[in-house]
Image (cartoon, rainbow, N blue to C red; front, top):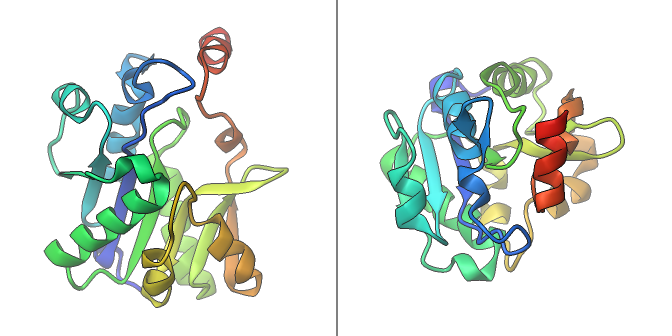
Length: 199
């Protein structure tokens, strides 16, 4: 199984937040922006290299984030959708840390993400030997999700505005899960954000 420092994290934060009307990456919750919450969770986890993939509003977003211990890249093809950011992030992580044996894919709008959750993904991967470990929200599964390098080829073939859910569904017998009930809370609209602030 992968040594912890050979596990990378890719934070997918390139979207335009079109339904929200402003960059969701910079929405404040508990004194931090949503993206900073994700960055802190990643850099404080037991993973090694952390990549932050920006795109829409990249200059504005980058200027607001404490970027110590992370590598920031700009996905010029962000308008294609999430798949392009997965490819960009994976290419970058393999360039700067070629020994990376597994990656955790994260999104930037889950306010209750934590370093302990990311460590649970890593520990479950090591304990079960499963090459994919994803989160179980109770009624659904979703990010953050860990993929062993044996799936890097499939991740690189993703196209359009799709994440890695298709790969998980196609390989259910190779998937372990960790419970993350708050994972179903993500911010796509002003109503979502208001509900979060009122919770």
